[in-house]
Image (cartoon, rainbow, N blue to C red):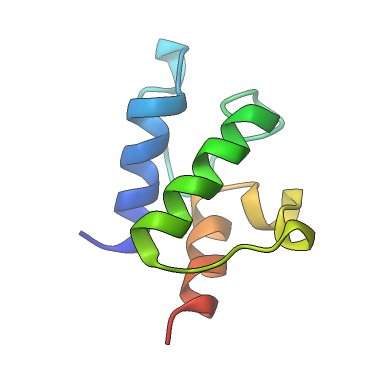
Length: 81
């Protein structure tokens, strides 16, 4: 499973509470639609750090990096060796 699929699977299983977001796409807005909130971002950050053995710094936790599955995947990809 690739980065996008892992991220999407975590969001769908752990963060999505509204069934209308069950079919999450890579470019769906996560924050503006309420799919994830500040607590969700913290949970997602912990998952990403553990799953991909990366460190996400506080200044990187911004809407541009966590706005979509695609942007989250790009952030992780940049951090991998």
